[in-house]
Length: 210
Image (cartoon, rainbow, N blue to C red; front, top):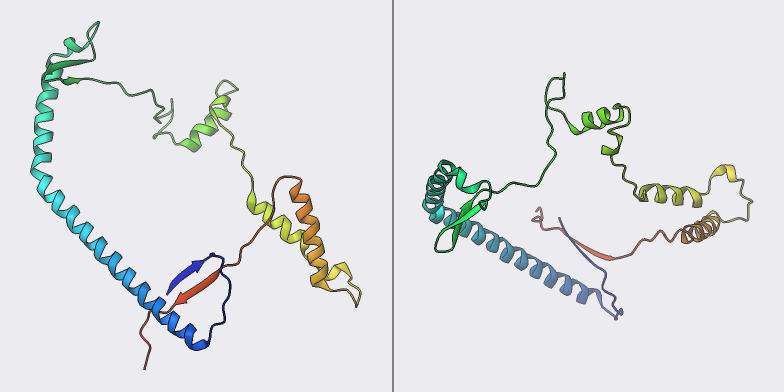
């Protein structure tokens, strides 16, 4: 099943059923051609990637072997990269080799007196139980609960049997009135509940059974 949705604003023209069927047939044909082209493109890309991986395999091995040789030389001469000396040195042709230190990062380890590597959940619990000095290591994130807004809006405009409607009262009209009131309330917060209508074509690309 394939679905296409459009939100393009159009001015309806007079269209006969025959014209609609012809247009839908052309739509299906175009959809299938696009799918074929995209599938062939994806296959070609996969073949190119596989060929590139094959062609570069020996060069990658050369990179690893020679990088290790250069690294071993640098380790043997580590003093040349310490103290007042630069962490990197130019060897020839503008090429530089040396060592670099990554920025500080927090890494989980086994807690003192504990067993097993710490996890984030356990770290948070430990911070809250620290007596205050580590509580600042826990960050609280606040975000709008849009699902709660939608739930409140549904309930605000809902008409129930306990509302005791009069015989001449229209439940739909009452629901619309309540929705309007709820919309006004949400507007004071700078929000509104919206839904959009769009035209959809669901294609059945399975062969028809005879």
